[in-house]
Length: 215
Ligand code: AMP
View 1 (cartoon, rainbow, N blue to C red):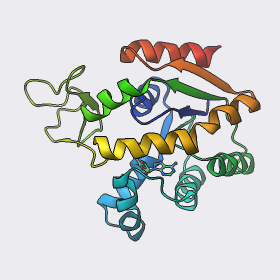
View 2: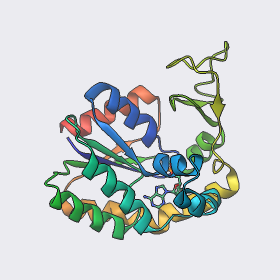
View 3: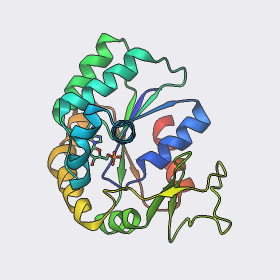
């Protein structure tokens, strides 16, 4: 099954994608992770997008479509692909449609994760991740274990994202409402939109997604 996880920053797309990867052998394609990797490894493209990302703006369609094309052309996935944080504009959605048609890959569902803005701010400003495996923690709801070791991999380095601050979040939310939320109507019209409540415990949201995908 190939799916898109759609939702504002902090909706829990990455967390839920990781669960789907573990349970269904799916492959997570997160353009945010790919761009952060490009920055860390210091590629020309990574340097070019750094300031745009830190400010909370979207990088160009051309760059992210190129990244997705590379991954789809280069990799097989028996369990299917999870598009996480892509597409984020109508142009990206059109390009993805064309790319999937070209590669004969079927998009089964677009799962919209609904979360209100107050919850997003609270989640994002409290968020950190394991530097080794990417496990997501939250200062209030899922703190880093007292022994300082990641519960998933035992890693001891934890990071906060440079763009997880209130200033950048305002821009990211505005980008979501202006550029990404029209995709809800776009996929609704195509007939493969499923909406789930993204508030609540991680397992409950995972259950909601499972229900939506089984439906
Ligand atoms: P994310 O990890 O999905 O929250 O993405 C972090 C940042 O990477 C975003 O705020 C954008 O600057 C950039 N980014 C990630 N995915 C995309 C995309 N599909 N289109 C444009 N910019 C993106």
